[in-house]
Image (cartoon, rainbow, N blue to C red; front, side, top):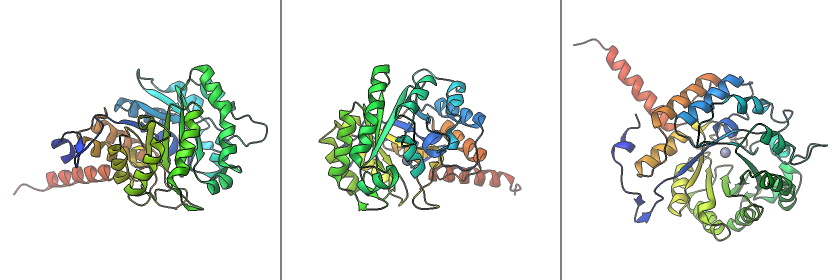
Length: 346
Ligand SMILES: [Zn+2]
């Protein structure tokens, strides 16, 4: 069903530059994608969604997040979700951070009075997550507006979580939000993103995802950002989290993997809009990333047909139109074929 991309595989190189032989896709749909949905999504739907994603071959799924239900009511059933999914061997089910909304960001930093930064971590641990995430912004203005503190202070808040995770033997993933641009202060210098990546690395994060949270980067700024970050953190420990707000996500991912990045974050059906531009696209769609990787001859371990089914399932369940171009194209092609079949024989 994946069309041309799978019919014409090429060697993993592009324009003379080597590409990674394989890419790990981090599926963020169940957390990043669903957390801002207004209507409460039944736990059953979330469980089936996650099970379909793991059945499609995705080996890393951000399943939920443990923040106060007051801030992110959509994720209030995180423990139930974790308890009911069919855990596939070899799949990492993680607790994601809470980028996206100011309230969620504040909750992730646990500025809620009376709570400790590690209380969400403790609940996540009880629920059996395999990995947890922490994050900081690369923009001082974003940090102050959303976390009510400086970048440095936000990093200090996570030391407790990082230490607790280390003591429990749970890997920690770091996120740098607004790594290329900020909704308040505009362009973010590559060195600023690199410095936050370094701080998260020093704190013990095994992987650091550089997020273009508002989707304004182009391949040029993404290249500058990853080149700067790779001076601080080995490139094999960096991940690309690209939003498609300005239609640049796939080009940006290609730029990143040409530099040696081999971990890419994506959300099936492009779930999760952009909280800073109403109606705009947010996360790059997993289906579209898979199509591009297949076309480049890069292995990813995902069954494109099963992934498409997972996307259709969640879109039908929550009443959303898929933001995946691949999903729209293949659905259109199928409908065309069905219509042709209905035409009377001549
Ligand atoms: Zn995202």
